Image 1 (cartoon, rainbow, N blue to C red):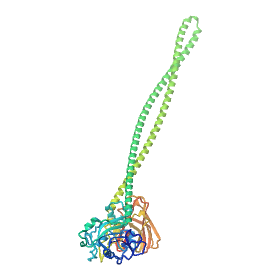
Image 2: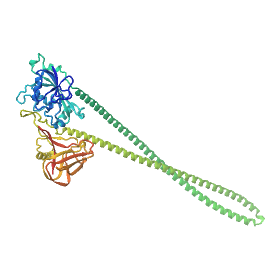
Image 3: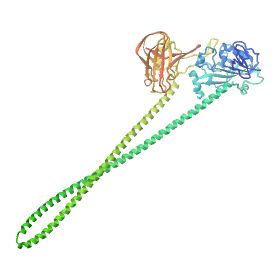
Image 4: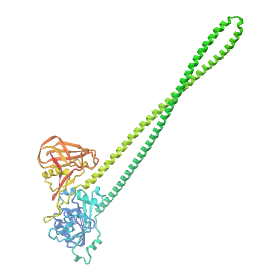
Length: 584
């Protein structure tokens, strides 16, 4: 028995017999895959076809040849480019489509070992469809295993998410792998059932498939580590925010304590002012007593002068007045004592003046202390105001980030809920019978005028409504307008920002059929709402636009994806994309 690498090219599998239509290095047999394969019936036990069968012109005829040369129970390992991928759709050398439905036309066996969700179609529930054209291709190749290979951004998603993305988008998978068993009737099994073959089945895989799977596992591990790092970063930021709130609380407490100290200081200041008023009242009383003492002293001085005059008169008298003179001496002695008392009182007045000066000095010191405390209180008031401003800014930033996060989550939920999923395209045709039928997607009320206009001018009545790729990641999205337009005053589009109120701008360009930019209009993304139609009004009308002029849509400086609604129509030639637009 032989092992055959069908369409091996220059990279033949080790231990296999290589067949190709070109004489490349390593090719053992030169033959056309569209013709008869140069092998005997039932002579191949393992056949590998890696990226070769998509080039054949008649896949059923080639599969009939493969069925002929393979023995009963032989293993087929087929690897092909996945059909829903832009590069494969554009490749002119690919003539056969490969997706999850392709192996269904190689058998009439109604059962399969894979999850029915992988190939669900409302018009074809059983697996085998080889007789759906009311004919029998005389082959029975049964699928055992099916595997997809995804682009890096979709590797780490769950199977349900990957399955939904394959239905909704292109450029999700780049290739698909089938493991199949050639079944030539139960009578050839010698008592061994098909389930027995499946139980003992050991799938063959080329080395580059194992390397690709290892790379995807490493990528998934890296994504998991990055997810954990982002989670740790969120926790760290939450901890920092909590610490900031604690610091703010402590600062508020300190400010409250400072305010209490300030109030206590003001109370002490009032008490000091009251004491100062009492001191001043005492000073006034002392001044009044001093004035009275001075008046008494003046009176006594006047009396002493009078006594001196009387004494002078007495000295002139006769000696008979000697007794009176002695009396006067005694009285004079008393007067002298009174004068001494007055002098003592005058000394007490100087002491009072000194005390008054000391009290004034203490008053000035108290006023200086009050001025210092007033400046400290004003500084604490300024610090409190700054802390309030910082707290308000932090609260505002937290509210803004929370609003953006809630808006992003709502946009994601809305996006997954929108009717933008494409029904499976009628890519398989057998004898004039199409499997599946494309139906237009429902639209929201605000999109109805745009849909009606597009259906009239582009014949997109059976097209599906989808979201384009992120406009923020490309230079622009360009559409060819295949009809003349005498006057253009405005362009209405349905734009779907992922995050509401995102910074950045969105705009359109009108380009003539000769690639001349005629005008450009821009709007801020904050003025564009997902539930409304964005209207771009031209500053000056554009006239006489000829057939095949261009409409370009672009986005600049956005912080999140911004797609635009499109219409897609699938035909045998592939997919055609049209704008959901209204020209006025």
